Amino acid sequence: MPLHHPRRRFSQNFLVDRNVIARIVRAIDPKPGQHVLEIGPGFGALTGPLLEHLPAIDAIEIDRDAVRALQERFPPERLRVHCGDALKLDFASFGSGLRIVGNLPYHVSTPLLFHIDAASGFVIDCHFMLQKEVVDRMAAAPDTQEYGRLSVMLQYRWQIEPLFDVSPGSFRPQPKVRSSVVRMVPYARPPYRAKDDALFAQIVKAAFTKRRKTLRNALREHLGDSDFAACGIDPQRRAETLGVEQFVLLADACAASLSASSG
Image (tube, rainbow, N blue to C red; front, side, top):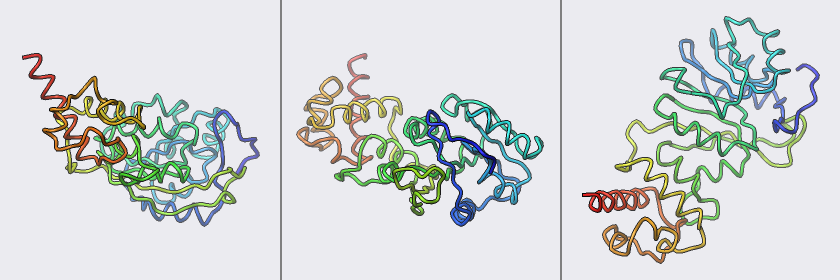
């Protein structure tokens, strides 16, 4: 790996453990003909092993020094490097059938996951290295400390599978937190589907923005007691006690109320 001082503003922690890298590649199991996009390749610790299995991949990298190093190391017909911010990347522009991989910058991992979630229809799967705390939240069950808005929104569209943890010693410099590798696969047919996805997201956000309040108080601008009764949900409950299915019920009840009032 080229000598490089990690930049704090990019939350750079470079993966250097070859055994962990090999394990990630085995989990991804890349095959020729698949379209892989790597987020935050850095200096290519994962990129090189991926290209041992694939004729070419795309990568998005914000650090211009890393971009130059990647372009010097890999020929352009094998690695198509896009210099920019993954938070602003239009994943749909790559077409359908995309496999996304990467060691996501921890300081922007949650907004980046929401950004990728919006492009789920174009994605086959994702394999990400993240802060373990974030992976725990992604996969959390209702009524647990880790369960929240991120859990609901991702589990609405994706099957979330934590794969394995990675110790701080696998990185340079060593982060102060443990990391985990997670697999995300979008549902071909989501088990629960709201009539209005945007309204579903709005209800979930409102419920968890006022997490310690009851549902009645947190969602008073969206739902009345009759709506809760129709859903069979006690309005005295709190957001973290509801599963995805129940949030779908609340969103659909809100949609019905809005339709009735506008009619």
